Image (cartoon, rainbow, N blue to C red; front, top):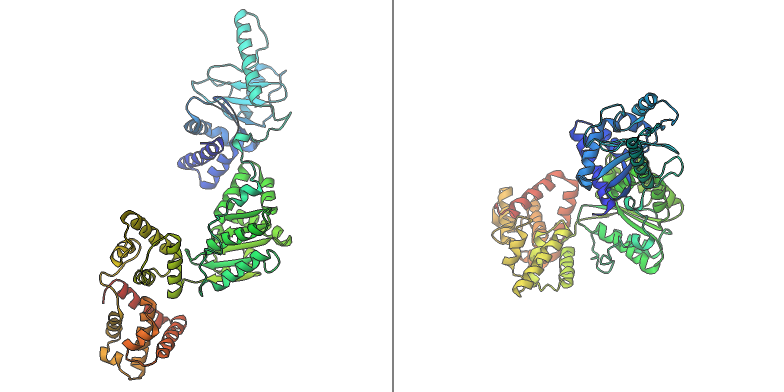
Length: 534
């Protein structure tokens, strides 16, 4: 584990320890963020506490816990110092005066107190003197040397002070920056662009009716970033391809402009970067890193809800890039106005550009997605298996990808292409698949039973209102759940023209959108058919 990672672990462990002692989350975070490891020399670690208020009144009270956590992270043999900017004790002051002043400014313990075994050390510094308290070594200045023992002790004291000075330069002379091993170097353009997944491109994205607007918008801005519309806001449920589109935009722009600085980041990563910059006093570097990008791609912006400080910082980042005409693309699982606890000024900026939604793929789109991804995996699927998967995995492209990955692994182990039975074994792990295969007759029976009509009435030519609506719903479910051709459905219902089926499907879709009762009936029938309850 690198020193940077250990420093982050120390922060998290210290915060958790303070919370376990009864402190609130905000207070624990505040204290933990004040103790910042900055240098290491062998078994000695120096930490800074730049706030005199926190050092004198808060950190000192929790010093035992701080040292214990430090030993958990770096090992029980380490010496852990916290350095403050408190005023050092004047060299000319009487010994008792110096002790009292040291007691008032020490982060750890009073020099007048009896040293305890394994007690933490205190390091207080000015330009010339170093005053410390230790269990084993007296770092305090000795004014009068009257014996050989005193001279020997003085030599030990001076040498120890010299060693500490080599580790920690006094802050009043040359303010120390965070050491390289405790700091993350700002990423170069090449490093930043490596956050893009090269496999997620427009070529591998399956375009369909459900994502047509979003895909077209992303392709357009990739050709002319910052010149068409800004920002582009894409929203839709999870697993529908929003992240794929973000990476596709970045990869296409990078292909055309290899030297551009393209930043892909999730809102959670953005927040964590901001927190780290605050902890290590690197906020200016953080802002420069984001304000100097050519394209900003932000995934899952909804996770910034209730994060007021992060929202404020993102507001300034957004404004700066927008004014420079740098392209911004944002994704969310909700429409901007529907994201709770997001500042109105941010919502208004999201709404000023192009808003594009991605809907769950229809049956035909799912078939196309399955066939495209199966080819990429060298997966040999029969048409029946493709249709079977498309009929059961309806709302999430990631679920389709997961099913195909499992089938590809099974195929590689057995050498045989997937069958309906083996596919069902994988499908049952993520969705409920009926033990008996669903067909047109099962749908017809389920609809007739639900509406309390005879199956012969449902199949008849009677166009009375009490029969037309059930008949239309049955046709819609046959198309939606089975993906049957309209001609096949027409034949099953005794109709001569497939346009009757097309009209019925569109009519039910319209009713589902507008009428809550129809929507509830259709959902209930789907549930029963999916669970083989009819």
